[in-house]
Length: 283
Ligand code: GUN
Image (cartoon, rainbow, N blue to C red):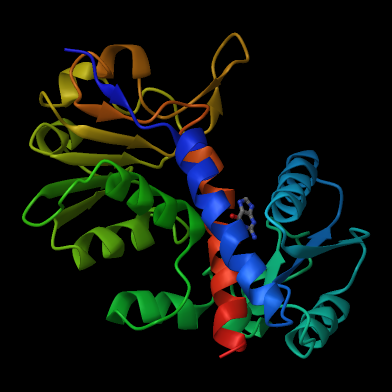
């Protein structure tokens, strides 16, 4: 059996077209959705990420501002910038790119962002809203995974989902989103005793560890849906996920590739959240 691919590029294109249409409608009412992206320091990966985020905004008709600061910026200075953006009516979403330099308390900065503008979904108010099923912003990567499941018409009710990885950004929010759709969810991590025993029972597996070959063909049952959040390099320097794609695709029913799977969905959901923030602000 060869799994069907869930194409993150194609789905992103479709969702970004919808974002562009809704952005046009808002503009007609005199509101241009605006995202501020703050980058402190010169982390090369972060520079690529923020450039991609700003470009995606432009392509979908969203206004974006990229603010770049020296690594020597103080925490107080950054907090002051966040506060100013909280009060800026032309900005509906604020994203502080992580990681921040060590002398800045990242959590303190995230908590300084107004929850109404927390389009990353990292604020504790956003986490609390997700946990209790209240309106808020969902973190973009797990939100994108949910959209991928929706795109194949997958009904999670009563299904068994295994999430591998327990980060605040992916694993934990992913588990809550799956639970909200009535899946039975297990969160596995580095201390899980028998990962294979659990993944073998799973109808859906989300791999979000940041390590190659965490999931191999002998660990999955036929027809399983596999979402690969990993972004790693193999020995040849090629981009690869957490899943042993070549073997698992022979057993799975659906699988996301890397690249071209979950990756593009993260930025797409950032656009969706920013648009949503602007729509809420304009009501
Ligand atoms: N660094 C890596 N990924 C992300 C992300 O999704 N949001 C922010 N703010 N920083 C990141």
